[in-house]
Image: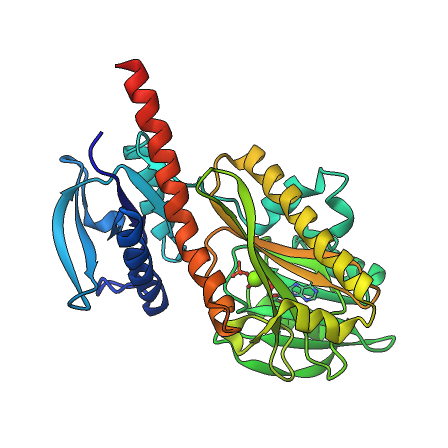
Length: 373
Ligand SMILES: Nc1ncnc2c1ncn2[C@@H]1O[C@H](COP(=O)(O)OP(=O)(O)OP(=O)(O)O)[C@@H](O)[C@H]1O
Ligand SMILES: [Mg+2]
């Protein structure tokens, strides 16, 4: 087999062939780490592919010149899917690419939307108690029924938007609810008290439908009223085994209903945040173990259902009683939380792991080919 080359499959955000700034920075780091490991990294989008010739006008980063250049190359044998932008029908490009080139070695299969993932995990009796009650929005009755059993509910787009377009509805008194929001521009919208009718017309304005999930709200307020949760990154290592690469806390800005870093959230070391919440060392240590054990169960289950995966980031929460919850699972996670807490080792480990896993898959495939030759 030829030398291994890893193609990072991404997507242009607009017609100017622009790759998101943050992703480009990540790809530069991947290239540098690849150099050390003997794995060439190139970046491609389905729009750059000549489907007839199976060639691609790929971009490569030259660290010495700090410059991106383009070159036509045969499609790389290994594909790392970072296709994160699903708007504007772009997801069809991804499907066409995968269908046209099924024999490439993909590090992961695409994961389904929040609702499908939830339904799958719900089947596992050990995972189920850690999932906030969730349904899709089919009618206003669904919402108000959920509000009878949980005082607080979240409405979230079924396809994640990095903490944008999320609503929190809380029962205030017999006739009124408090609606809080992070809008599509990530602004913190001032909470308002509304009647049931007013909530309904507000939701009609945003065209709410089954593309939203209704989820039981979990109390994740710290004493200073900010919300917080945890980002745990699971990755396959160079032996193809799942490992926890790291876990860090996120604290939302004042008045925010979400903790996402892109929405102004602050990253905090795991131990520091747990110690702030629980005085008992034994409880903190047991929670840490529980988070790890639970995350292994989740990745095992999802991989069984959706096929090979290489990394997943879990948004975990621990409520005031010390109960562990899973908000969602991200299949194209950023590693930023680790650099933000100044943990460079974990950050670089998180960059390297998909490359090590790619090399592992490549070796396996080479061995198989040799045996068949
Ligand atoms: N059920 C809930 N109860 C309390 N807080 C929640 C709940 N669901 C979400 N949140 C808060 O909102 C944040 C964003 O929610 P979530 O992670 O589900 O969506 P997202 O980040 O927009 O999706 P994606 O990462 O796929 O773009 C969470 O990190 C958490 O801070
Ligand atoms: Mg999230």
